[in-house]
Amino acid sequence: MSKAPAVQNLRPFVSVMLIIATLLTVVFFKMEVRRLGYSLLKASRIEKQDMDLYRLQNIAFLRLTRPDRIESLAQSRLALSKATHGQVLQVVGQVFVAQ
Image: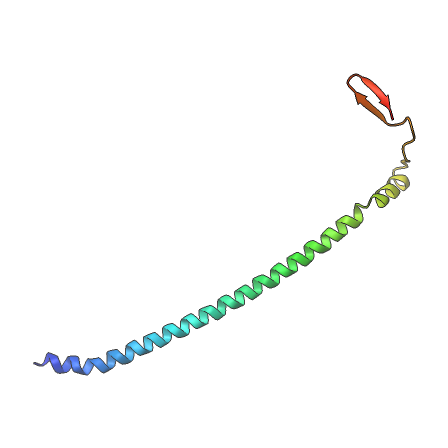
């Protein structure tokens, strides 16, 4: 008979502890969702910066490899000139063909 009053006295304590544990779990999950949201925001900012950098590097590459720029560099720095008729030789089998 002495166990029944002890169990009766523990029921409110266990109920309160269960409610507190549930509330702490809810708070933990909400904090975790917010933390993941911030991580996602940071990752999206990094992705945007990377895409901008890629775009800028691609533009710089396209500017450097323009055919007219390459031609002017070849003529000014390497003293090359445009090929005239008969300078380009095409190898067909064992025979050279002038174009």
